[in-house]
Image 1 (cartoon, rainbow, N blue to C red):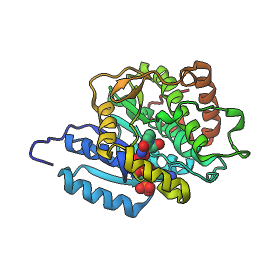
Image 2: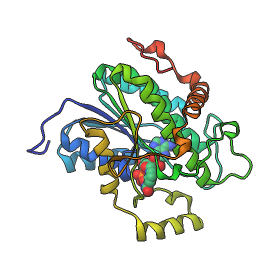
Image 3: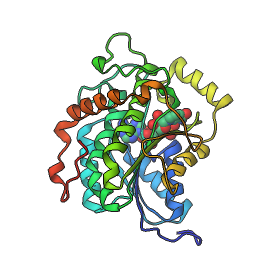
Image 4: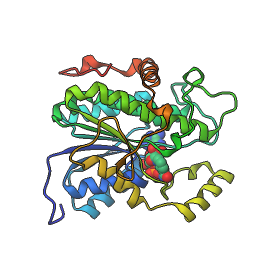
Length: 297
Ligand SMILES: NC(=O)c1ccc[n+]([C@@H]2O[C@H](COP(=O)([O-])OP(=O)(O)OC[C@H]3O[C@@H](n4cnc5c(N)ncnc54)[C@H](OP(=O)(O)O)[C@@H]3O)[C@@H](O)[C@H]2O)c1
């Protein structure tokens, strides 16, 4: 622990903590003295990030859990591990996400962007509702994006088989993050849990690099010219994670509440998305496994 930091007793879980803005936010939470559980899909990268963050922050209360969050069975396994270790969770940051230039499906047969960027947020939050409730002041921060603007939810065409575009799939998933946050805030406020989401900015991270080809080249050039640093983007996650109060269900840009697109403010769309998400994750949801069940449906 750095000389200035004392343990806060807070338990924070952050997905996508091995890289980019998630890693920066995890470092900030560690510097505050939180117990931080870093989640990533690659055990070797996770172990390396863990060791670096412990050395950087001096906080020994960090751990790493591996899960490929595009698989709902892995989300379930992760939640089981978290619940076994932590009776109480104060903060969940849903951050892990990606863009896939070529259409792919998850192991569960769901379009991969929707599975990783939305369904994982939905299911992990659902399974951790009990520990978040026991915090007394639980908070769920979801990383959305300005990319949601002009997005179409189109739940009648979840697979996006015809005319797939990586950008459109990504836009839809980020619209889903904002609609999910609205519906979540409404459902969870009675349990003292606050939910909000944010656009972190256009940030120079590894985001999109895996795609290779022209897309990655163009994105790389844009990042060099226009992007802000991972420290700035991660700092915006930290703002929502640590602000004394947040507007429930709100979308934040540059640390301020900002109106999202009209499509992202549609209550019927938020409810429809909720029902579809319940259906797609039903097999892995098990409210009965909670000692004090707090289902979010
Ligand atoms: N960068 C931007 O300009 C920008 C703008 C708006 C929103 N965002 C959002 O910010 C979030 C973080 O992105 P970033 O820019 O920090 O990108 P990044 O550097 O690529 O980090 C993404 C993180 O997600 C993890 N991840 C990816 N696929 C995963 C999977 N299947 N299971 C578990 N973890 C997985 C990655 O793990 P690995 O280390 O194993 O790859 C990494 O830790 C995303 O939700 C993104 O949509 C980014």
